[in-house]
Amino acid sequence: MKQICVVGVGYVGLVTAACFADLGNRVIALDVNEQRVENLKKGVMPIYEPGLDELVKRNVSGGRIHFTTSYAEALKDAEYAFIAVGTPSGESGEADLQYVEAAAKSIAQNMRAALIIINKSTVPIGTGDWVADIVKSAQPNPNEFAVVSCPEFLREGSAIADFMSPHRTVIGSMDKDAANKVAHLHLPLRAPIVITDLRTAEMIKYASNAFLATKISFMNELADLCELVGADVKEVAAGMGYDARIGRHFLDAGLGWGGSCFPKDVEALAFMAKEKGLNPRILNDVMDVNNDRRKDAVKNVTKMLGGEIKGKTIGLLGLAFKPNTDDMRYAPSIDISAALVRAGANVRVYDPVAMEVARPLLSAEVTMFKDPYDLAKDCDALMIITEWNEFKQLDLEKVKGLLKTPVIYDGRNIYDPKVMKEVGFTYRAVGR
Image 1 (tube, rainbow, N blue to C red):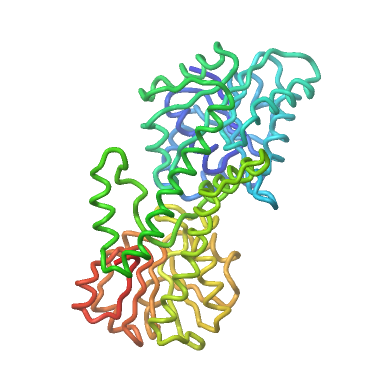
Image 2 (cartoon, rainbow, N blue to C red; image 1 turned 30 degrees about the vertical axis):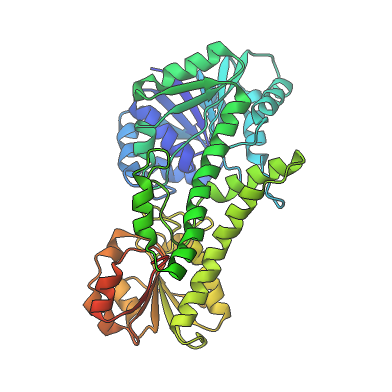
């Protein structure tokens, strides 16, 4: 049984802490937010992630995970300290490392024995060396330590499964012994382990997310061409996906990507390239295409309503940036609802789990509903924003009867165009 400290109890930190505890380790999860820690002690989760509530409570009950705001308590017997704090985008697109810096300083000031410090947060290339310098200079008394990069590859909505059954574990360090110890910590996961240097490990994380975002933007750009030439982008994606060199994942056209990773990571990678005197043309285009998807969705629903949406009532089904999460960071629904309000539309919204998180992020003029059918009543159009399974199973005949005009813009391609036409909808999907 290893003694592990995890700094930060957001998406990455809390999942990391709970999963390591479930593997039989003793984990102390630390956060400077006192209310968040108190809620966790009471069994109240700060985020929605399927299965996380049960996982945390099981390990709290088993005495394998504890929560604290005290670095001294968290580091007392720790052999490993994971830094899993936020790295939001700064004003110019750079990663904001203030929380990483604060965590590194606090770890340095409270460590009392040899420690392996592991960057779990997504950080710019060179951050591992920077963290090492911070720890060395901030220690009141010199203690041995090593810095390791072990980037996360967790998808919101399936984070626990991703942690327990990863495609690979990437470990980077200039200290081979420390890297091997971190690798040993991950051995129970029985996944391939890539051991490299610090900067290469940091780059692997950014490169992975940027490439996946590129696949999505490529398909979205292709979707526009498919509509003009009469091809079906879903069938195109299926045909492409059989090629092992391409793969089927992340080929779904729609409203683009959002969330906590892709937007800031692509932007940060482009910023790093510019800082080094390069012109990140592909990365810039990937971001531009993604931003255009939201504008295009509003343009398309406007066309479907005869070119004018002022005074029209439009319902948005889905708010979270993807299903199975309440994460609203960079969610398409924010930009789309704001654009509709600016154009004079009456906007209604519904999401199965993200309503409370979304409330402060949306215009005060947006009306929230607790049921998709109540939302649909007397709407001039519906827009599918998030591909929740609940929406795939709606009674379409009932929905049609509730709408003022049977108009649906399907931004996630969850319905069959032939079926929608048969039911009697004026229907438009993406790239079909």
